[in-house]
Length: 326
Image (tube, rainbow, N blue to C red; front, side, top):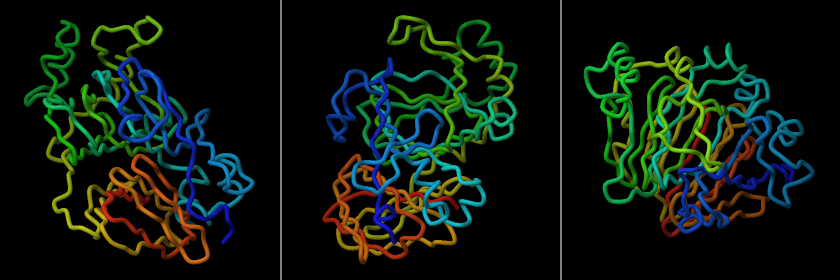
């Protein structure tokens, strides 16, 4: 295995948002900045492709790495299924204020309207201030007619469903589901490779440049789906140390929580999928035979190539999100 296909880190991309804060720097080691709302950890989104950190071979970014390494990096099944595109996007999000109320299109709409993947995502809450909440879906009994009426009468907030949250909560956000991250919440977001958002309400506030952000009411109306709320809450049913605790398996990603206070074995399958590890608490060491060890600090993310095979994660108290493409 070449050095380029050992454990891989990328340069996080930070984005200023009107609703962003300082917690990604304070708690997760990101560069200091004002109103930093998002840190994109691994991205194949056009125009926002992740750059590799120094020392990972001749490729400069994720696109070049895939071009050079192909199925060795992604796994044969994933490489063939997604035609060499990186299918997932990994972020840390700090909402000092409420995000816009929004939804995302599914694959069919996104492909037809934008030539893109749809946007299925999930959230894992890392930190929540007292009283923090998420907006997920509508209150019971709200249908398309009630939604349109509330929208036209300027009282959309009256029909939104708010969910109180704390660290360790997890939620699956399917395409078409109305949602918003509430102020005081920091979370990890795993999603399809897509940057398409349809806003339906933005709390009547200007953006960082003083202009009102665009709403997408017609697009949202076509993509809106009233999902079964029983499928949204996906916090792990169990929490066993040094073992995989499944959070959620969708058609696009499978996310597992590993609380680690010893040495655990993991593996990737060259015929199947790459793996991404997001350290959300503590720190850990990634070790594989014949490869340089990689230290993963809280707030850092590593890509494990499909061709890696067996490796070890060592820690005296870390929490790791493991993500593969099922």
